[in-house]
Length: 191
Image (cartoon, rainbow, N blue to C red; front, side, top):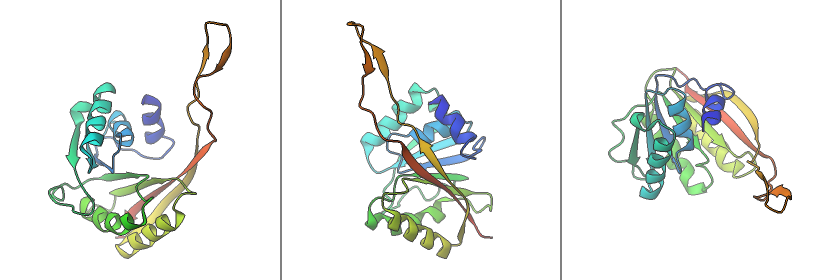
């Protein structure tokens, strides 16, 4: 996860040091853990699944950043109880794959983000999956007063492992995967 933190803070132009960060739809908490390792003051994992939140906590503990993290059960369709939180940065990773989720996500994010014009939403999304959902989301965010300030495509190399087997053969121990691309988009309030 340290390499992910380095990429998050550097290559992906995310300086989260001393910021309040939300990992929205956190899943296993990878983005939040990377933010914690990159120096975020606080990372709040937001997910509706208790098992996902347990995984987030375990990953934060394993990576040595648990003291700055907080798991919060959160359903973007019923955003009760977490709206008192205001974040400097919200990480939204691979959350737009279901068409019915786009509008609730777009509606709740501005409520969670701090009022500063420096506050931002960072969307990480596979470019070839649910592009129509991402386009709709970006259109809605424009209506809610946000503009796209940065966009980049990143070629993500799937982890490959080779092992010297006892019989002397060297070979992959996991199936090989195609290169995967993600699009990273930064949104900020227009004024």
